[in-house]
Image (cartoon, rainbow, N blue to C red; front, side, top):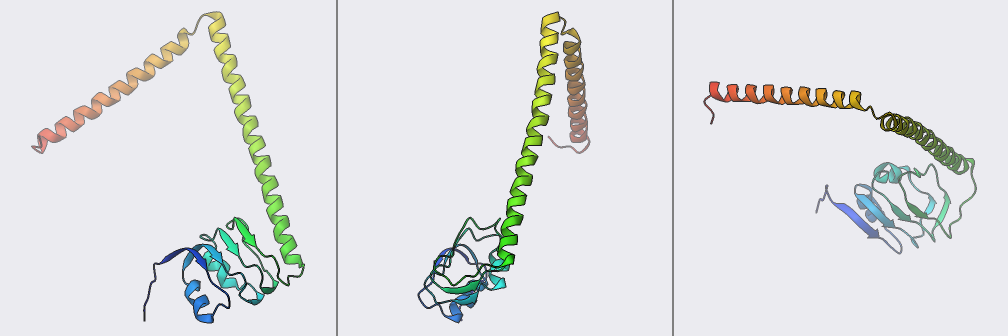
Length: 174
């Protein structure tokens, strides 16, 4: 029997009439694109599908089957999912999953608005300081700070080079 534990399936199209052995083989593999359309799969998508493919699956086509329910799809990991021509019924779980996704996207857009406001105010303050310095003609204090920082950096580099030189001398490394 052939065993491929580290095989990564990039694209798999199984069909029509997928067998249980094929599903068991796919169960243990990572897949980024999976096409299980026209396979007469009945019931619901098994939970192990999401737990195994949560982080790898990007495109999932399970159209033209006989699915009756889809429980808890991790929408953040799947780019596209095709559920056309199934026997799906509207459930509260699916609707609540979509509501969670919508509220999550609202949070992210609000977060970015806040971040942009912070950057904008910081930019305004920085430009105001630059304008003040250039209009008064006295950016001497800024130049003094830069010279002091440059001096500290150079002094630190010289100390480090001296320590490295002494270490090489002590250990006879050339």
